Image 1 (cartoon, rainbow, N blue to C red):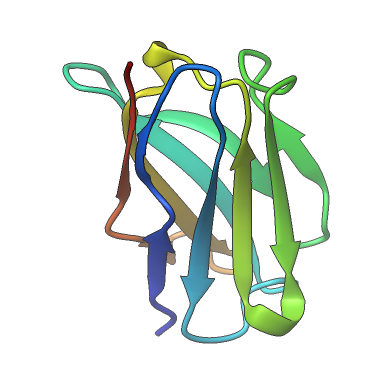
Image 2: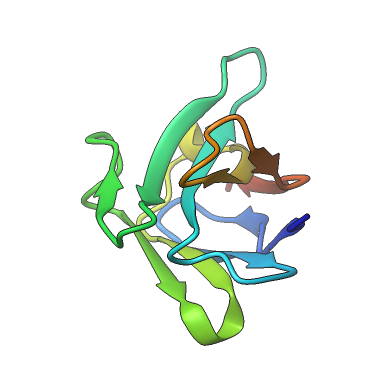
Length: 118
């Protein structure tokens, strides 16, 4: 089974940028829909952005002018470029893979912490 590992989180000042990576242990694009979620302290996990198995990209309205999701087939890696970060972006960011044919096959990464603070 494919495993996902997120990286790239850290501490950044408001207005700064980070690029998160979600690297899979096997082929993901074209087979899985890939998504980014985040969970802030005391809040529910929320969907941020994703790439479907057919390559359609989408972002939640609240971040679409600041965050960009992309993928690298050769590296089996999905990225989340985050610009103009705000304190309210502080959260644990997770990636998720959902198999295109077996929707019950869902794989989560372990998460990476993003803290936006001065």
